[in-house]
Image (cartoon, rainbow, N blue to C red):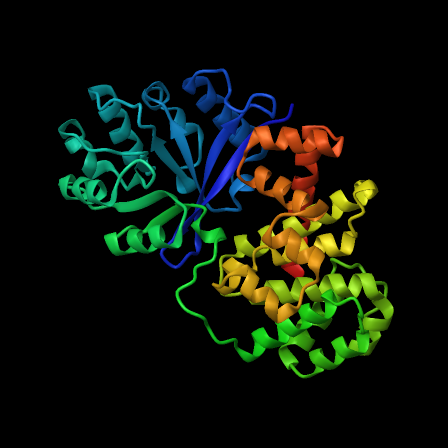
Length: 405
């Protein structure tokens, strides 16, 4: 049996990965399952813990899981490991005596407790000393309302989580208000405060990306650029000799690497190490997302030759699609350093062409937009299950690749 679980990352003030929120899904045909919240919670707990283990879904990070009033009172959270489970009380939970006793019991056992979409009233006052995290919805509340709510939380000594933060301005406002955790799409968008000068290493990596994206590809030029930077040379040799490529004999020189691998493969691993290095100061999730998109777009190009998309160009486009978040600049500005061709620019900036469509499909999967996934699958002449499996396979490939880069 296949379980469908969506996960959304939660970041800390430094934009490091703090946790994931796990969300129950009932396949692709039913975007909003026609089951009650209690059954959804029970099935999520069963699938995450009893099927694969919650750690496999979160990579050892914390998991925020929604619980209804009934599941809280039935102590369902106790089926999950306390060390990495955040018990999230849905906004529909009423502050009853039974709920208070159940939350007290969970706290005594060492669980972390959060309130979802919380809006304070006096009935919740006695709960606040038991609560570790309060989530507040930036789409539902104004800044003035958020300030008012925070002032009303007498006795609360925990942390605040800003939910549905989708712009840099909202992220900045949340920081100034004292929020510690952030959930939404702000991390995937440009965070432009001012233009920033490029470091020496960034210039090398961007120059490498420029050369491998050019039509007149020249392996000798790539080797010469790499030779100028010892760090890049080391990473390249380590990467090409890693288990990821499973070489029969060790490659000991840059020239040997260029000759042995050939044009298509050297383009791929140079693109990988450049992207991974440009994203070193950012959450690892961002680099893995870039590599996942790259592999996913490459697979779709290979499986759908009728679209006329070059798999190598599709791969590179997927990798470049998150450079705005990695370098805190607009993607259009970054691409001027790379001199990316029309196909890549159209795909990344305007989402045009076959590769633009592949990227739209990837984004639909990442945002768990089931209707768009179904529509894309039909256009690709694939089943929704096949499309999502391709993305999951790409994600596994990305973990292996980023571990070697």
